[in-house]
Length: 314
Image (tube, rainbow, N blue to C red; front, side, top):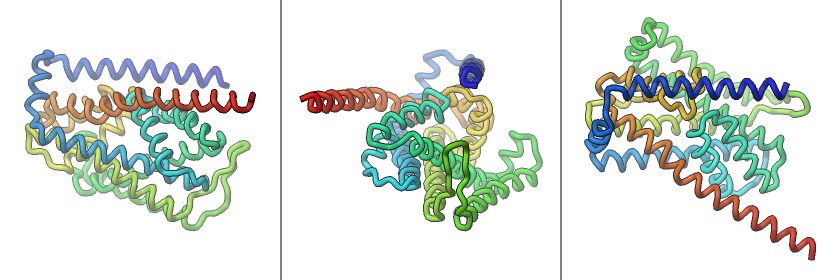
């Protein structure tokens, strides 16, 4: 079973990379390097800085994903440690791809060092995934109800169907909150036991998740608004549909898929420079910070472990 899972993971990764490469080719084939550089340079510095602020606010909001998970397992780990584990795991995981696996492995490294069990870390990762789903469901519901025309055009569905999807998304969130409020019986999966979070934690999940994706959409809109009159709702619609495409393709970090989908939804409003700028601001800059910081943290962990081993020997 383990071997089959490994093979399936490798196949998924290869498929995602192939899709990403093909879509990147389709998106950038009409442009030279000089064209792309000129398009990025056309974005005013003020827009770039504002987009950076939205991205930073999003990563701050992402620490709430882990915070709700830590509180769910009833652990009193200090917020600075939670924030560190969240940023390092997500800044790397979101760019590497298969975020649930890559960021989950990094989370286990940090939380285990601070005394958590494998079951607790698994629950934190699971609840973080649920928070992602809740946040996307809230944003999708709001966007599809307020702006059904763009989604209907892309998905080739009637606006009534898009409104129905939006309403269903919000109803799914409401159902989750109802379960959190009334269901207390544990759910058993093999040797692990899961319980619904409290209503307070469930509400926090929905709010934090929605605010995070709203901030990411604002970041995307900011770089596009520099060269075109782009409404926030249209940018958010493009982001929602891009995430749906990313889930279907499993492309690492949504590379190529996000750019192609946003370009398809926005048309000429999405300049090639705005797509590159968004990728750099939201994915590459956090990755450039997260990688060396993770190495520093790892070195500190190893030094403390060695010091503790020497003390025990003495």
